[in-house]
Length: 88
Image (tube, helix red, strand yellow):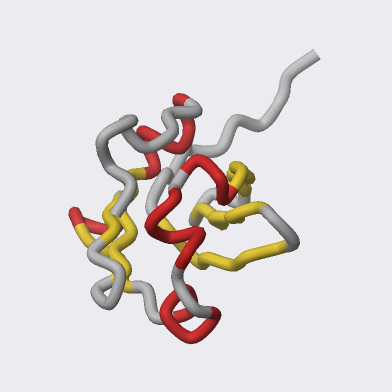
């Protein structure tokens, strides 16, 4: 049986907070959901600050300027929480 394979595109399409999870929509249709607790600086941010994100790194990263938090889709896909020293 043949299947139609689509190209992976791990660039960020959208970002949202759902409950206690950060959800990142990718351009290829996938969504990555990770606990906000993994990113203490972002977790402590106000709702307004969390909504103020921009893509960076050619679309493979997310930056919250008011919080000075950077995340990459590569790290999110690996399930990498913030380093222990990065508490903000």
